[in-house]
Length: 374
View (cartoon, rainbow, N blue to C red):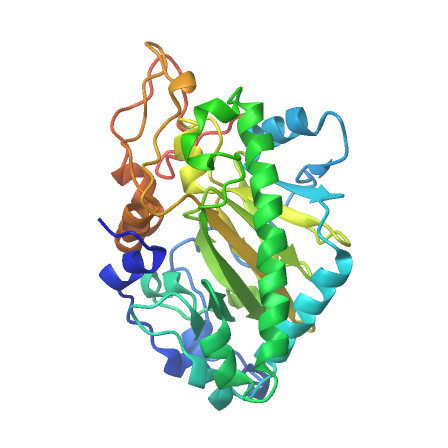
């Protein structure tokens, strides 16, 4: 059994064509290869269109005594929420954003020196989900799993240590926040520290796995026909996302359509991932989300993808199952699930489901028959 997160990607390489990564600023018109049409998946939700509603994703102040209860309600009814007063210094968010922009501002040939290998995790390149779509996405990305030292030496031969220090500090702060959010989320389900053995002896989730994903969405000459990042769920327990001041993130709200998640100064977006959906036995939906682009403004996002230790089996928590609420999913490690996701994409959850819900117990993540909850 693979013991490291990277083994899952080595076992399921994705052959993406980094040659499609171009200087986006050179285009006066949208190339045909980037035009999403009625023939493409999710075309029933036109990117950049007017299918959005007035509903707002919950915003939760983590200093609020009722934060745990509010997080539970947001997870159940939305699968996503924003947090303020989260403890991550605003200065760190700012310098990490500037470092990310410095990366994407490099000449394309310089960035390609740090290109992600087909069987790798870290490095510069297009989104891994790109292999599931016939059209290209108007974005570029950079993934950091572990230390960025090797790739940063390629990008900044003289200044790499400065950028490494920034990223490592950001990773540390995200890890602490992710552990805090995990206990709030699990606590909202009635789960205690004694119920999660893999949280470690200090219940600090120190042995968990994570990766940082930086995404850049340049200004686009025809945003209504382009897609920044196609609709998908995350393979994580949870994802912590920082977005700059330009809107672009949208989540699918059942019964209403795509809802824009507006940037909040200093705020962070938290979304439920597939593995937390499994842990909750289907109670908390893994939210389907995407990124659209803007005609005049660039957009930057920084996602902290948070998962369990690679070899830990994730399955519905025993407190959440019973005669009327059977376990909906078989046990699966994050490594195994990443391999499943690499093969089945948004049908991955269905592929690890073991039984249909009973007595009205709704699996909110059946993307073939999605149901509004709450």
